Length: 463
Image 1 (cartoon, helix red, strand yellow):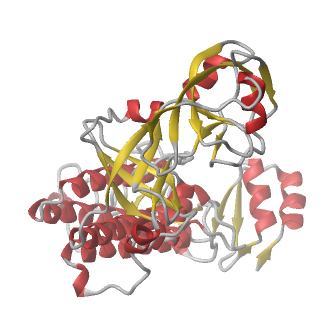
Image 2 (cartoon, rainbow, N blue to C red):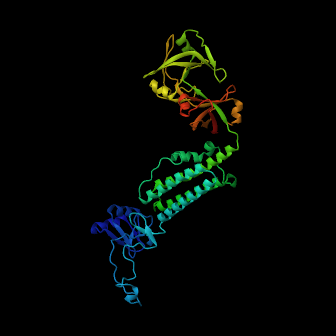
Image 3 (cartoon, rainbow, N blue to C red):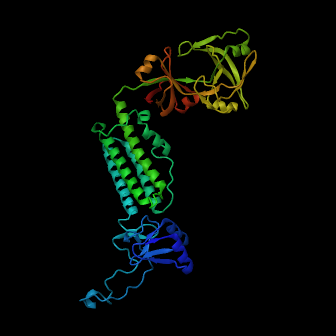
């Protein structure tokens, strides 16, 4: 028998009953189920208990829910072939008191009971097993000297416990960061391991080692938990009722893949010589066009070289200018030569805030969307419409060095700064020219943040 919303609505408006009894084998349509929920009606099948109307199918005792009732005194029953003296004082009977949970059932939500084969109970069991395997992996990683991975797995264990709590309490599961990454970053990095970890998508191999194999095992287990979750929370219409849990479990498998790729990348790097590079600190400075130089210092003025810079043909001049913004000014800003086609001021984010202009990060020569300011020299003033930037962190390499590092002009790489305050810098621009000298350039803000000194080096981590 198929029970429709129309039939239920018609009968209910006549009786206003809070419990509706249906014949065995009844199938409730989705619209009828929504009507039942909206009216707070309980439904039972003849010969079975109350149905849990939130479940995905509605045909047999598999979906029967026993709602606990207040304790009631048991009714006296005779035991066939026995007298009362053999079954206990006052002839207590052989049945369990009403309200006692049967052994083949367990609690689901808010006191409701379901059979232990229920899909949500199966999902919970898989999540429990997954947490056991996390602990086993932590023991292994301690033995392998992977203390960092042990800490990562402890974070994931907390994540798994929260998944369980929010499912049981029927509350939304919200999260922002797992192993240091947002959901979007987890997806991005798991899809492009070559870009972030220097390893290709390859089948699992014994050559990857025991630690990687265990991480891949945990990844497979988390995907199995996700499969059980999909079974538990997908209704008969194919709609998922807990997309928050499904998304979290999906990203969890990505996290394990990322950890495995990190280990593989690290092991590969240990076999190769480090790609080390010295670091130069670039203080605020300005490059002038010839027209602006003459406007500031006089017709046919020639800059005086103060010192040669690390990049061949470039020098710091003795001359300086003042930069004036809406809220403040910067005095004695050094001019670097030789002349450029367009004037360009390279300052730090801190300088921008002092001047009252918006910090805009750009590669050298890219002036679109950059702010301007006023330049004051000894002989005149120039209004710069654009060209003021926070220069992109970058590395200079000559052609041979770029070939040895297998990078190209315009690539973006990750660099680990080895200092008293070590950090990893993303999005470092590679600049290649046959005349360049190998050096990484950071502005003053970046250098101060990493406590960079004369002994500090950077290590290329990957493109």
